[in-house]
Length: 258
Ligand SMILES: [Mg+2]
Image 1 (cartoon, rainbow, N blue to C red):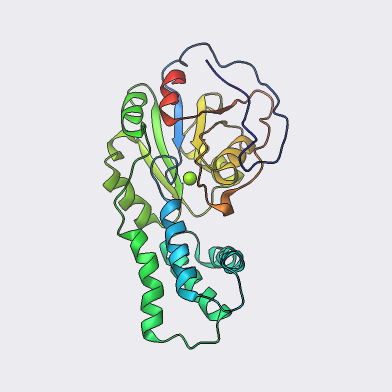
Image 2: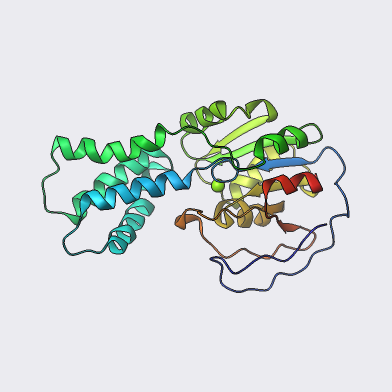
């Protein structure tokens, strides 16, 4: 059965969700277009960044700033870096170096520079870890529906992760966007000739997956991840008239609806 209530207890402020018309009591008919986010929807991602950030904060071992203050400053630096360099590991490397330089008066020696970059490199070296149920569920729904991967970040990095995930064969197309906002979803829907009535964005991020997809007139499926990146946090919007917003507890639950 479909559930239309969103669990506001995690990191969302309380809000009221307008209940939309039920989808159906069973699966939707074949031929829907399913747009899938990648990081923290199909595979683990943010936990590796969190681990790298912890290593960085320990290494910095700041005399006056608490770990929380260093983390807040890194978030601030990351927002600025993303504006000029986009998302991805290279941007993250630059943020760590900039944060170090801004918070310490110690000279950035070659050795320190390499050590800081090694924290980011640990992310790149990590194996792809699919989230529970993803492999079987994607293989199943892709037999009935058109699946398109819609991620943001560095094109080479994201396509490499898809290749290593073993999931590439299930996707009819792959889009790596510099930003996932309303305009990006409108453009994508137009390019892929999506029928808005039958197109669903599926992801873990209110900011990049759910709200802009609803804003562009698509349906949305929210699958929360317990460790979503803080820069992706946002209150989930209510869907506009005629659009559905569904929260699922697990990726495998997609097969109940599609
Ligand atoms: Mg994501």
